[in-house]
Image (cartoon, rainbow, N blue to C red):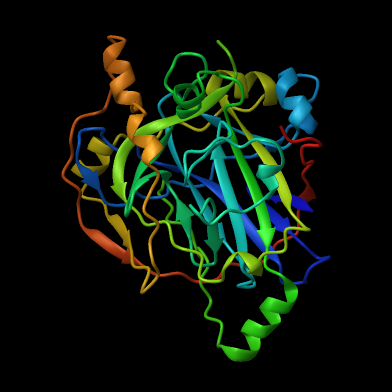
Length: 342
């Protein structure tokens, strides 16, 4: 089952093992300058609110109602990162797509391949080794930030790779490790707790949006240390996360959207910290060559004569190396999964 509690999705597999749980939330963050420089990790500014599509069926767009899942609000040109943790350290493989374009490989999700895993190239991340994903894996050790833009205007990765503005949003598929493999691991090794831990919080037209490429940052996507045969493909969970522009969010939910986040320039001027993550000896994936042909939202905007505001270069403040601590497991309400996959 998939549950939603406190703006976090939990993918649970009680039929596989009581420990088989993966938690996912979506973090507000700074949009990095798209200036040719590579930046450290920006902060988390708190979770985006998540709501069930079914709870607003009378006001949600028809396409959202058909695929179910949840939705969250984003301002145009706002960035996000996706936080992962495994409350019980049970390994879970996650496939992440934007507009049904795999964020790790750049390949389109089609047919039965949605529920499968591939290792040549690897098209998924592994929990608890991978604590987050900030964008599209463009090369080894570097990603391009997830930035929300309206569908149909040529900004999104989906439109540039497929030529269509059909899906938008974010898609997640979760696959647990086989129970017998987990029991073997517990017998032969001491399992270290490696989950996201407390978030780094800061004080304080069409409704559909998709994700384009923003600024570049240092981030590694780690190789699967377990191998393909470790994953229980008989049991998968899928969830569609629609992105609503701020005006549509207010009209659908009756709630005010979150205020626009500070700019990277404001943050840097205040001397606030940036971050780094040390992954130990974990091997990083090479990145997807197909993304090299995709224009960033800044490049598309410039070509349209609509340069992005707040795109000036910044000098990051102090950079802190992060560590992981476990978070609690929480109950929640069930999220409807899509009935069919294309």
